[in-house]
Image (cartoon, rainbow, N blue to C red; front, side):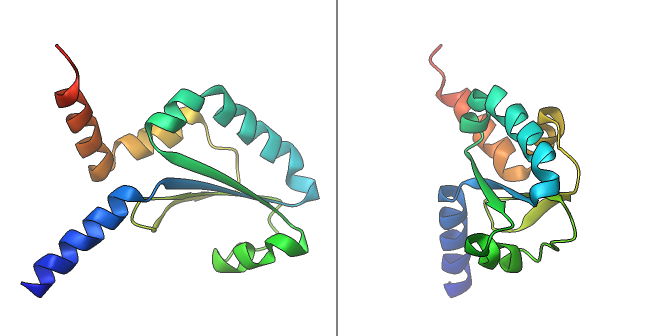
Length: 125
């Protein structure tokens, strides 16, 4: 019974946590960061629909803790990380990620498939 309760609590917490796109960049990765943000900004509706929170971390002292937390090497000029609702890393790339790749990966996730089914069932007919 305790195990079932624990699983249910994890599912509830995960469902309330947004997906995250984390962008880490140094001065030499600034162009990739700008390109990535242009892609994401052009698809704001899709970002909201998939409940994605975008965070950016430059190589400044203020953001150092996030670099360490996500084990990002400052040798890399640019790092894109997708974090799922469960807090797990789903994708890491040193290249700009297309909207199609990002949304395709998210839409293939079981939790997202469930969200899409619920949204489809709640649409007025």
